[in-house]
Length: 604
Image 1 (cartoon, helix red, strand yellow):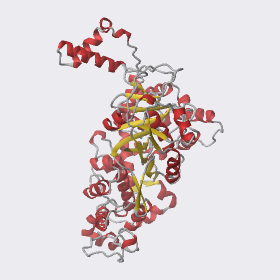
Image 2 (cartoon, helix red, strand yellow):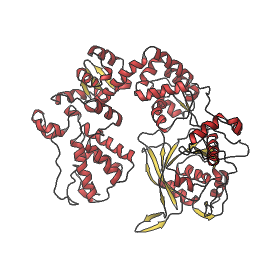
Image 3 (cartoon, helix red, strand yellow):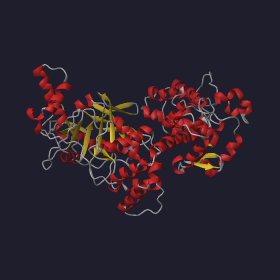
């Protein structure tokens, strides 16, 4: 029996992931070695599994190390614990290496399904698979961590084949030694966990004692029992429990930046427009810290946060170090991405001391009120880039005043616009117009303005917020059907399906043809299950094209322009594309407009 896992690299947009299969009846220590090989990590016994919902972490215990004590998390010894129960009862877990001397990606793992019998096709026949393997990968073409999955699978077949044996509770070095000797990976039919090195959290111990107390007293309210337990801890013997809550560390921004690898520091330096880069990593971290701690830099970078994210940032400052929930981390991640938040291997987060001092200083000077107005303006600018690329300031002002919470006069609006850094907005202020930097640099905005006619479409507040957040009009029924097609009919993950819709929006809104989008789809090796599915895709793609607000139409849709396309210089270009009811045969031209035969394009 095997388990199918989707292993997603954290902090990647769009998500980078591998879908893998791993055997049942192995320990977490064996799983660690297998994942290290499948994910091309350094083989080490310094790893950690975390089941967040169960508040359990699994590490490798050694004689020279003390048992870890934590208030919230119980710690299990990975070599003593089999994976079966956890793969059945839980939905997700995280996996990471804890090596302080090297930086490795962290992974979020989704437990997708159980596979009773694993086979791979070889021509017309099938072969039983007896080793862990990668079955799908989505990544950049030049990924610095991963190589060709076929090479990895070939290696796994040779060294990690499965063989039946007895319970051995092997540690990492023993597992690696067995693999290196060509003896594969041992699984056991009779699995039983050992608890000799298990350390339950103080919270778990309190709940167990509360449950015991409930059974003896007949009380039904565990919350009441726990509150009495905490109040009378010394009488019940709880004073002996060692409770370890997050404590404030000496947290300096420069020290935090030194935990980055050099490539990440160079990328951050480029983002901060630091030109003369020191060769030594520690010197580079020092220069970046200096730049991040300039008031003007912090003000401009924090504009990338919305109100909820800035609230979350202030909460960490007020609370000090703590372990965030999934929802809290979702709101804090953009702050972490700005390098104003430190994250540690025990999952606590903390704002560096100098960052706190600087933020409190700019906050006293009215930054929060400025952020409220400027962050909404930045959203309007981004949406204006999506819809128009070049826009008069009076039209941008019409977008801005759709939000009644930030009411300003036109003069104040123009002054506010001047405070938005160009590197944040990615636009250039040219007289009374705001122009997307890319078309301003090339000069193509002049041709665009000459070709366009009519009034600008003005979206409402809801449209602005959704389009800026999702980067495609997720409120449109045509796009909703497109996502559903990729996700439910082609069985692609939801986040990847959304990404394909974002690509469709970028293509069509900028004036691209359906054939351009088909080249993207073909390049990503999207497969249709049948001729009927390919036809449905083509029809949905036409709907999406016709319901996309286009730059050349000043934000209007082709369907909206059809009624007055006589006012457009080239009416045929904006006429909605009609669905064909005619049957499509394999040798016919593909309806997507690629110029290829149907059997070589959408009908594959």
